[in-house]
Length: 168
Image (cartoon, rainbow, N blue to C red; front, side):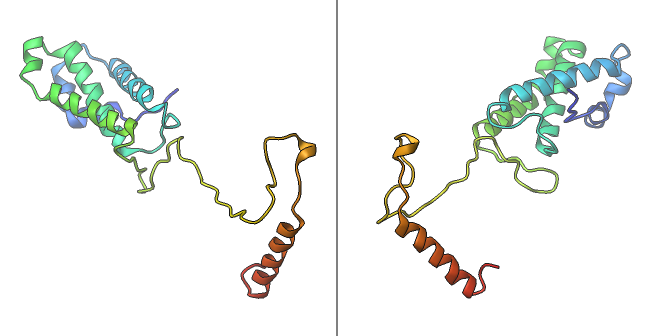
């Protein structure tokens, strides 16, 4: 599955020294690090969002920072160099942000500014059945009843709305 929250070009933009500083790191290697970062993102978000999440700029930042940290920690820096760089902090910030999204503390928006819906979002249905017999219950189908007064009231309400121009 190709998602590409980030790209090799994004990695070069954030850390231009990757172009010249590492001769044995290929674009294919970088794509594998990107895929690993995206898999981690999907693992954390799959319980709450349909993955891949389409057009979520916040995930681009997270995927870029995770992929760069993995490249640096596994292919470029020594343990001492890594410790003295900003990348452990950037990685931790990316993971913390990802955890906050997964917990519902941070809302994702798409590139158009629309909230990305999570899979736990439900519509609520409200009904006022005061004074009527229940239409449905846990009994069998033959035990269900129709309250004729409720049906008449619904029809009357619809007629009034039509007369007032509310329904066509």
